[in-house]
Length: 253
Picture 1 (cartoon, rainbow, N blue to C red):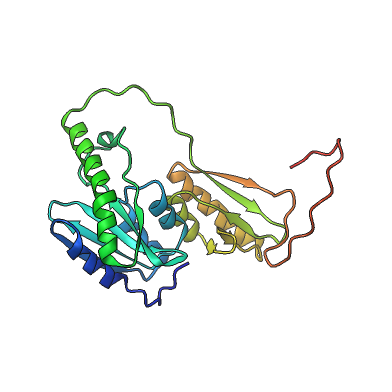
Picture 2: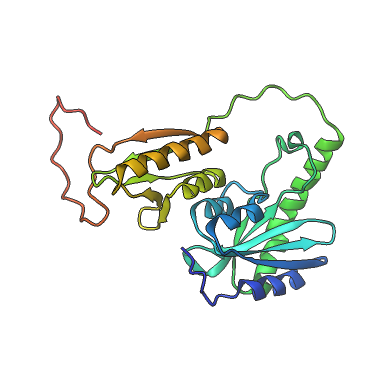
């Protein structure tokens, strides 16, 4: 998890990067006082891989948005766990019907070095061509709407909440909406577990938090699955030695 007090200067990096990219770009830097503050800025990130994963799983602390004079936008933030790299992702163009994005591959973002000159070259030769092509496809779809064959219904998103022996509850969300619902209801990100955890010291409060999080998730069409692991040591303990092979009449995990 990045340290908000890190001297790694995203603001200066983004400013220099904007001047090195082809075309005319401006940079706007944002520092987030609260974890939830990162979502209004990042909600238009057009990515289903590296950048969206970092937004969903980490407290980023700050970011910058680069805007080209034709309205194209890039999202820039530090890469968690890689102090010498930044993440750069395209941002979806506003004002289009969601149908215009159907069938258009997201121009997934990239990791770039903390040298803005090398980063600008990587963006100009990799991300921007894919971004401009995707925007052109969206514009074409908007100008030439056509009936689409019914697509298979996507698998609904689920958040799995797992109880451990010490009463702690852990959840691993897959979207910014799920992350926000958990955070709003008392779940705290634990980098050791790479999950959001909810203490079980007060079972009544824990149950209330789970119900409230479930209701907020349901409002976004996200379901909740509660489960108990077969066996697992507490967070602070050392894992036991491997178990002996199971007998034929014992159900394996």
